[in-house]
Amino acid sequence: MYWLLGFPKQGLRLEHDAITLARRLRHAPSLAHALLFVGLARIERDDPDAATAAATELLALSEEYGLPQARAIALVLLGWSVGQTGDIVEGLRFLEHGMAARNQLGVRINLPLCFGLMAETHLKARRYGDSNEQLDLAFGVCSELGERWYLPRMHMLRAHLLVQQHSHRDAEASLHMAIDVAQAQSAKGWELRAANSLARLWCDQDKRAEARDQSTTGSRRASTRRSCKRPRRCWTSWRDPVSSLLLGGDPRFCHAPSAADVPRPHVSRA
Image (cartoon, rainbow, N blue to C red; front, side, top):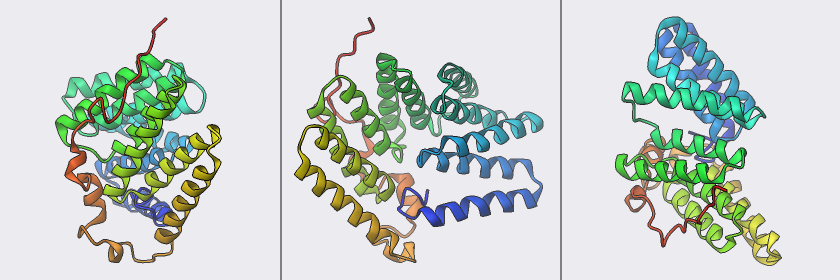
């Protein structure tokens, strides 16, 4: 989570510390819990190789000790990471098995994330219709469950899909929404990523002055956050920054966006 908050170095250190402490306990559920959150952190920063390592260990541990929920989410994380590193068919197979296992168990926590990772993998395979379907499900359960920490990435994914349909104006709107939601959550990692994506989109449209301004603004925000050594002291709206991120910050963003907010293109399945 600290990568999302704009503290990548602290996040990497905490990942290492969490795994080290969990191994010392010699307690399988504690290690599974640590591996889950480390795997999520590695996905958040788009590090599929590192995510594969965490997901593979989590899967082996859950099968050895009979931890069905951990096994289900391990398959989902492994599916995304395998799909991002080349074997998309195998990645989708892992994702489908993981989603089926979660559904059988009735597990709904992190459901927007799971649908979002499925959508990203379909996008990687250029299955745009399937990707849109999964993303719609992600927005739907996000509204239903109020679990919205993943919203900025969902809006960025929608923008990538819209670009593939040459709907650049709608993609720009989605990226602006991603930036707004990330700012409300103080998710500086995703705010900077969305800002850079918007700058690239404008650059592709020969709006170079706007792209330069956007890139400079995003870099300045990131530099300001990195220069702070005490993240909790910087927090003005919430006592606990990680809890704020999980709750989503601004309650305006607890609902799925309307069609007017995030236009959805018609995608042919031909």
